[in-house]
Length: 195
Image 1 (tube, rainbow, N blue to C red):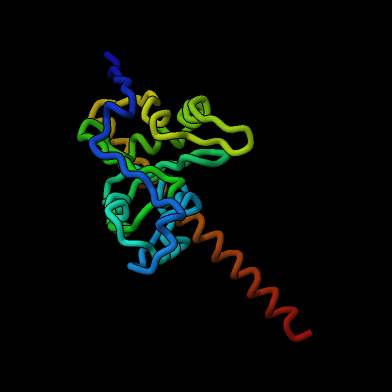
Image 2: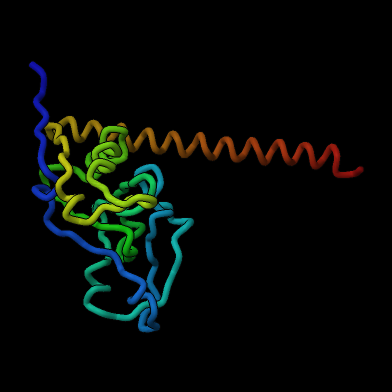
């Protein structure tokens, strides 16, 4: 017998919703923080190499925009929407106004929801809920209305393991390509460098 996959609105799966800092809060010098922007979300992960530090005003909103490991981070503006899961390396970083962070209930692993939102089907559903003529945008209410498939727990665990291994493999392939390019450049420089 096939496993049945439950479908739930994202709003029924959240325990905490965190909004990002607007430019108003970025005009202070009370504290320097690392801020995650749309550009920092890549392939379901947060790219640490591209994150910037900014000076901000210390306010209650600053504390509410800090992310924790396991938070699902979703872009709310752009030509395509992205989702990633925060890990320990970005604990206490803050999110920009173009992002929303969601702490999910134990019913679903955040990696499963991120994978769905990044999939073709998830992107199609996000696009259908977005508005705007040149730059698409999602408000938090629209985002929370998206229907999310919830596989059984054992399938979620399997999916997370597979996605982790696939991401690691892709990272190794990317690194290998970079090394091959450097090697080719080094050979060309050695051969033609003396002329």
